[in-house]
Length: 208
Image 1 (cartoon, rainbow, N blue to C red):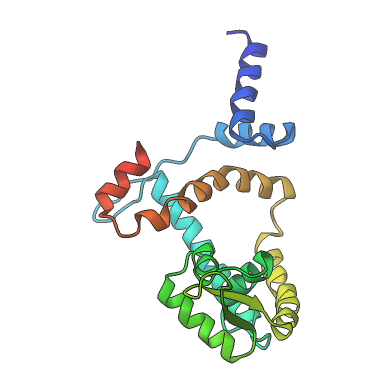
Image 2: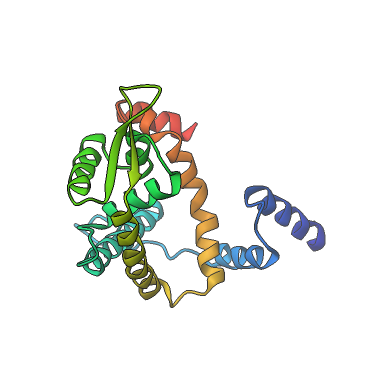
């Protein structure tokens, strides 16, 4: 195949998958996939994860580092943990959301999220009121004290993010977002619907 035609076809496939990507993103993507993955070396008596597992382990480890450093950085800001900051940001951005929406948006179990909100209400960060049209529904709103805490905590959270990622260029960060966002989008729309199903059923739904 003519190399120009091949390049145009590759760009077309990339643009379809990442419609907002730039040419620079495309070139970075091509360089990334051109690098041959280092195969896992089998060692007797040890469990060596395949490529999928190695990537997920890496993401999980980075997530745990982020959570640990964020919780440390939030000391004295009015938040006990990064999940509290996340749920209050969601409430702030959504304005006056239903309680379950704010909780599920942060991928938190309803019982855990409810307990978290109870503690945050006691500290005066958020209020909970009945919905005007449906008394069974509770809606949340950030208090002035919560808004002030958000602004203080935001600076700390941003410092943690910079500390962890400042070795990457903005282009590298955008590429990571472009590659991983479709996974987040897919499971965000399925997780709550599948949480009570057997795993074998979930597996089949996600690979077909």
